Image 1: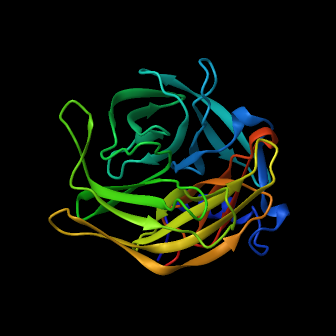
Image 2: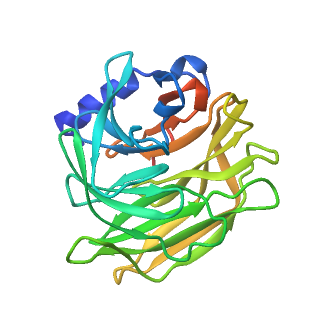
Image 3: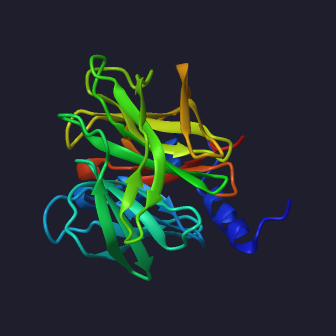
Length: 298
Protein backbone atom coordinates (compact mmCIF):
# COMPACT_ATOMS: atom_id res chain seq x y z
CA UNK A 1 0.00 0.00 0.00
CA UNK A 2 1.37 3.44 -0.89
CA UNK A 3 1.79 5.77 2.06
CA UNK A 4 1.01 9.51 1.80
CA UNK A 5 4.14 11.60 1.17
CA UNK A 6 4.08 13.12 4.65
CA UNK A 7 3.95 9.69 6.22
CA UNK A 8 6.85 8.51 4.06
CA UNK A 9 8.85 11.51 5.26
CA UNK A 10 8.07 10.70 8.89
CA UNK A 11 9.05 7.07 8.43
CA UNK A 12 12.31 8.03 6.71
CA UNK A 13 13.28 10.50 9.40
CA UNK A 14 12.54 8.14 12.24
CA UNK A 15 14.37 5.26 10.56
CA UNK A 16 17.47 7.43 10.61
CA UNK A 17 17.39 7.34 14.39
CA UNK A 18 18.90 3.85 14.25
CA UNK A 19 18.07 0.18 14.04
CA UNK A 20 20.44 -1.32 16.62
CA UNK A 21 19.09 -3.68 19.29
CA UNK A 22 16.66 -2.10 21.76
CA UNK A 23 18.44 -0.13 24.46
CA UNK A 24 21.59 0.72 22.49
CA UNK A 25 22.78 4.11 23.73
CA UNK A 26 23.59 5.44 20.24
CA UNK A 27 19.93 5.25 19.27
CA UNK A 28 18.90 7.89 21.79
CA UNK A 29 18.85 11.56 20.74
CA UNK A 30 19.15 14.22 23.42
CA UNK A 31 16.43 16.87 23.44
CA UNK A 32 17.05 18.51 26.81
CA UNK A 33 19.87 18.96 29.30
CA UNK A 34 18.09 19.62 32.59
CA UNK A 35 15.04 18.69 34.67
CA UNK A 36 12.83 21.27 32.94
CA UNK A 37 13.25 19.75 29.49
CA UNK A 38 12.49 16.08 30.09
CA UNK A 39 9.86 14.31 27.98
CA UNK A 40 6.88 13.26 30.11
CA UNK A 41 4.40 12.82 27.26
CA UNK A 42 4.31 12.66 23.45
CA UNK A 43 1.61 13.20 20.84
CA UNK A 44 2.51 12.75 17.17
CA UNK A 45 1.65 15.55 14.74
CA UNK A 46 1.71 15.58 10.95
CA UNK A 47 5.01 16.24 9.21
CA UNK A 48 7.47 14.48 11.49
CA UNK A 49 6.91 16.51 14.65
CA UNK A 50 5.34 15.74 18.01
CA UNK A 51 4.01 17.69 20.95
CA UNK A 52 5.88 17.15 24.22
CA UNK A 53 4.48 17.50 27.73
CA UNK A 54 6.81 18.70 30.50
CA UNK A 55 6.11 17.87 34.16
CA UNK A 56 7.19 21.29 35.44
CA UNK A 57 5.47 22.64 38.51
CA UNK A 58 6.49 26.29 38.93
CA UNK A 59 4.85 29.28 37.20
CA UNK A 60 6.78 30.45 34.17
CA UNK A 61 8.33 27.07 33.45
CA UNK A 62 7.46 25.43 30.10
CA UNK A 63 4.44 23.12 29.95
CA UNK A 64 4.58 22.11 26.29
CA UNK A 65 7.09 22.00 23.45
CA UNK A 66 7.28 20.80 19.87
CA UNK A 67 9.77 18.06 19.02
CA UNK A 68 11.33 18.33 15.54
CA UNK A 69 13.63 15.80 13.85
CA UNK A 70 16.40 16.17 11.33
CA UNK A 71 18.38 13.26 9.96
CA UNK A 72 20.51 12.85 13.07
CA UNK A 73 19.33 15.38 15.65
CA UNK A 74 16.20 16.25 17.59
CA UNK A 75 15.30 19.58 19.14
CA UNK A 76 12.53 21.25 21.12
CA UNK A 77 10.83 24.58 20.49
CA UNK A 78 8.42 26.16 22.99
CA UNK A 79 4.66 25.97 22.68
CA UNK A 80 2.85 28.59 24.75
CA UNK A 81 0.14 27.51 27.20
CA UNK A 82 -2.89 29.83 27.03
CA UNK A 83 -5.60 29.34 29.63
CA UNK A 84 -6.25 27.67 32.97
CA UNK A 85 -3.12 27.04 35.03
CA UNK A 86 -1.73 23.51 34.79
CA UNK A 87 0.85 21.86 37.03
CA UNK A 88 2.89 18.69 36.49
CA UNK A 89 1.70 17.59 33.04
CA UNK A 90 2.50 13.91 32.56
CA UNK A 91 0.83 12.93 29.27
CA UNK A 92 -0.58 14.37 26.07
CA UNK A 93 -2.66 12.67 23.37
CA UNK A 94 -4.21 13.74 20.07
CA UNK A 95 -8.00 13.43 19.78
CA UNK A 96 -8.70 11.23 16.71
CA UNK A 97 -10.86 12.88 14.07
CA UNK A 98 -10.35 16.35 15.56
CA UNK A 99 -7.30 17.95 13.92
CA UNK A 100 -5.43 20.28 16.24
CA UNK A 101 -7.23 18.96 19.35
CA UNK A 102 -5.36 17.30 22.22
CA UNK A 103 -5.91 16.10 25.77
CA UNK A 104 -3.20 16.69 28.36
CA UNK A 105 -3.18 15.01 31.78
CA UNK A 106 -1.75 16.40 35.01
CA UNK A 107 -0.48 14.02 37.68
CA UNK A 108 -3.32 14.80 40.10
CA UNK A 109 -5.88 13.68 37.52
CA UNK A 110 -7.01 16.83 35.69
CA UNK A 111 -7.56 16.45 31.93
CA UNK A 112 -7.15 19.59 29.81
CA UNK A 113 -8.68 19.80 26.36
CA UNK A 114 -6.37 21.85 24.14
CA UNK A 115 -6.63 23.44 20.73
CA UNK A 116 -3.17 23.83 19.21
CA UNK A 117 -2.54 26.40 16.49
CA UNK A 118 1.03 27.16 15.53
CA UNK A 119 3.07 27.64 18.68
CA UNK A 120 0.14 28.19 21.06
CA UNK A 121 -2.02 25.67 22.91
CA UNK A 122 -5.31 27.14 24.12
CA UNK A 123 -7.24 25.47 26.93
CA UNK A 124 -10.80 24.82 25.72
CA UNK A 125 -11.96 23.25 29.01
CA UNK A 126 -10.86 20.77 31.64
CA UNK A 127 -12.28 18.11 33.94
CA UNK A 128 -11.11 15.64 36.59
CA UNK A 129 -10.74 11.97 35.80
CA UNK A 130 -13.42 9.78 37.35
CA UNK A 131 -12.63 7.54 40.32
CA UNK A 132 -9.52 9.37 41.57
CA UNK A 133 -8.34 7.44 44.63
CA UNK A 134 -6.42 8.77 47.60
CA UNK A 135 -2.73 9.07 46.80
CA UNK A 136 -3.23 8.37 43.09
CA UNK A 137 -0.47 9.59 40.78
CA UNK A 138 -1.22 9.59 37.05
CA UNK A 139 1.50 9.55 34.38
CA UNK A 140 -0.28 8.01 31.39
CA UNK A 141 -3.16 8.67 29.02
CA UNK A 142 -4.23 7.21 25.66
CA UNK A 143 -7.21 7.72 23.36
CA UNK A 144 -8.62 4.98 21.10
CA UNK A 145 -11.02 5.52 18.17
CA UNK A 146 -13.10 2.62 16.81
CA UNK A 147 -16.14 2.92 14.55
CA UNK A 148 -16.69 6.57 15.37
CA UNK A 149 -16.49 5.93 19.13
CA UNK A 150 -13.77 7.22 21.44
CA UNK A 151 -12.36 5.61 24.56
CA UNK A 152 -9.71 6.74 27.02
CA UNK A 153 -7.18 4.69 28.97
CA UNK A 154 -5.16 5.99 31.92
CA UNK A 155 -3.40 4.58 34.96
CA UNK A 156 -2.35 5.30 38.50
CA UNK A 157 1.34 4.41 38.12
CA UNK A 158 1.72 2.23 41.23
CA UNK A 159 5.02 1.69 43.02
CA UNK A 160 6.99 -1.45 43.83
CA UNK A 161 5.71 -4.98 44.46
CA UNK A 162 3.16 -3.91 47.06
CA UNK A 163 1.32 -1.33 44.97
CA UNK A 164 0.33 -2.41 41.45
CA UNK A 165 -0.66 0.13 38.86
CA UNK A 166 -4.40 0.52 38.28
CA UNK A 167 -5.35 0.72 34.61
CA UNK A 168 -8.64 2.48 33.90
CA UNK A 169 -10.69 2.64 30.70
CA UNK A 170 -13.90 4.46 29.82
CA UNK A 171 -15.88 5.79 26.86
CA UNK A 172 -14.87 9.36 26.02
CA UNK A 173 -17.01 12.17 24.65
CA UNK A 174 -17.23 15.94 24.88
CA UNK A 175 -19.88 18.34 26.10
CA UNK A 176 -21.11 20.97 23.64
CA UNK A 177 -18.99 23.56 25.45
CA UNK A 178 -15.86 21.38 25.18
CA UNK A 179 -15.51 19.62 28.53
CA UNK A 180 -14.19 16.03 28.40
CA UNK A 181 -16.80 13.51 29.59
CA UNK A 182 -16.12 9.96 30.73
CA UNK A 183 -18.57 7.07 30.67
CA UNK A 184 -18.69 3.87 32.71
CA UNK A 185 -15.23 3.04 34.05
CA UNK A 186 -13.55 -0.36 34.15
CA UNK A 187 -10.28 -0.95 35.99
CA UNK A 188 -7.61 -3.63 36.19
CA UNK A 189 -4.53 -4.11 38.38
CA UNK A 190 -1.20 -4.38 36.60
CA UNK A 191 2.25 -5.46 37.81
CA UNK A 192 5.19 -5.04 35.45
CA UNK A 193 7.86 -7.71 35.19
CA UNK A 194 10.71 -5.23 34.54
CA UNK A 195 12.37 -3.24 36.02
CA UNK A 196 12.43 -5.01 39.41
CA UNK A 197 12.62 -3.35 42.81
CA UNK A 198 10.79 -1.16 45.27
CA UNK A 199 10.89 1.99 43.18
CA UNK A 200 9.24 0.60 40.04
CA UNK A 201 6.43 2.64 38.52
CA UNK A 202 4.47 -0.09 36.79
CA UNK A 203 2.83 2.16 34.18
CA UNK A 204 4.56 5.41 33.24
CA UNK A 205 2.75 5.77 29.91
CA UNK A 206 0.32 3.97 27.59
CA UNK A 207 -0.14 3.69 23.85
CA UNK A 208 -2.52 1.53 21.82
CA UNK A 209 -1.69 0.02 18.43
CA UNK A 210 -4.05 0.06 15.46
CA UNK A 211 -5.05 -3.53 16.27
CA UNK A 212 -5.78 -2.78 19.94
CA UNK A 213 -2.59 -4.01 21.61
CA UNK A 214 -1.87 -2.06 24.79
CA UNK A 215 1.77 -1.01 25.14
CA UNK A 216 2.99 0.38 28.46
CA UNK A 217 6.27 1.71 29.75
CA UNK A 218 7.51 0.93 33.26
CA UNK A 219 10.30 2.82 34.98
CA UNK A 220 12.35 3.00 38.14
CA UNK A 221 13.70 6.22 39.59
CA UNK A 222 16.20 6.33 42.45
CA UNK A 223 16.25 10.14 42.55
CA UNK A 224 16.97 13.16 40.36
CA UNK A 225 20.42 11.82 39.50
CA UNK A 226 19.34 8.22 38.89
CA UNK A 227 20.13 5.50 38.36
CA UNK A 228 17.18 4.96 36.05
CA UNK A 229 15.85 1.85 34.36
CA UNK A 230 12.81 1.15 32.19
CA UNK A 231 11.06 -1.21 29.83
CA UNK A 232 8.28 -1.29 27.25
CA UNK A 233 5.86 -4.22 27.46
CA UNK A 234 2.73 -5.52 25.80
CA UNK A 235 0.18 -5.51 28.60
CA UNK A 236 -2.98 -6.77 26.89
CA UNK A 237 -5.69 -5.62 24.50
CA UNK A 238 -8.54 -3.12 24.38
CA UNK A 239 -11.71 -3.27 22.29
CA UNK A 240 -14.49 -0.75 21.76
CA UNK A 241 -17.92 -2.05 20.74
CA UNK A 242 -20.24 -0.50 18.17
CA UNK A 243 -22.25 0.86 21.10
CA UNK A 244 -19.12 2.44 22.59
CA UNK A 245 -18.52 0.11 25.54
CA UNK A 246 -14.86 -0.54 26.39
CA UNK A 247 -13.29 -3.88 27.28
CA UNK A 248 -9.73 -4.31 28.56
CA UNK A 249 -8.09 -7.73 28.77
CA UNK A 250 -4.69 -7.85 30.47
CA UNK A 251 -2.19 -10.63 29.85
CA UNK A 252 -1.47 -13.03 32.69
CA UNK A 253 2.20 -12.24 32.17
CA UNK A 254 3.19 -9.07 30.25
CA UNK A 255 5.52 -9.53 27.27
CA UNK A 256 8.64 -7.38 27.68
CA UNK A 257 9.44 -5.90 24.26
CA UNK A 258 12.59 -4.03 25.25
CA UNK A 259 14.59 -2.96 28.30
CA UNK A 260 16.43 0.34 28.62
CA UNK A 261 18.90 0.52 31.53
CA UNK A 262 20.03 4.06 32.28
CA UNK A 263 16.86 5.74 30.97
CA UNK A 264 13.51 6.61 32.54
CA UNK A 265 10.86 6.24 29.84
CA UNK A 266 7.77 8.34 30.53
CA UNK A 267 6.39 8.71 27.00
CA UNK A 268 5.22 6.01 24.58
CA UNK A 269 3.57 6.99 21.30
CA UNK A 270 2.68 4.66 18.41
CA UNK A 271 3.29 6.59 15.20
CA UNK A 272 0.26 6.43 12.88
CA UNK A 273 0.72 4.43 9.71
CA UNK A 274 3.97 2.82 10.85
CA UNK A 275 4.98 -0.08 13.07
CA UNK A 276 7.16 2.18 15.18
CA UNK A 277 6.81 3.60 18.64
CA UNK A 278 8.37 6.92 19.62
CA UNK A 279 9.83 6.80 23.14
CA UNK A 280 10.71 9.75 25.36
CA UNK A 281 12.57 9.94 28.66
CA UNK A 282 12.47 12.28 31.61
CA UNK A 283 15.89 11.69 33.14
CA UNK A 284 15.57 14.58 35.60
CA UNK A 285 18.92 16.41 35.94
CA UNK A 286 20.21 14.62 32.83
CA UNK A 287 17.41 15.98 30.66
CA UNK A 288 15.39 14.11 28.04
CA UNK A 289 16.03 11.75 25.15
CA UNK A 290 13.96 10.28 22.30
CA UNK A 291 14.26 7.24 20.05
CA UNK A 292 12.08 4.80 18.12
CA UNK A 293 11.56 1.06 18.34
CA UNK A 294 9.56 -1.37 16.14
CA UNK A 295 6.89 -2.31 18.71
CA UNK A 296 3.62 -1.07 17.17
CA UNK A 297 3.09 -3.57 14.37
CA UNK A 298 0.12 -5.97 14.16
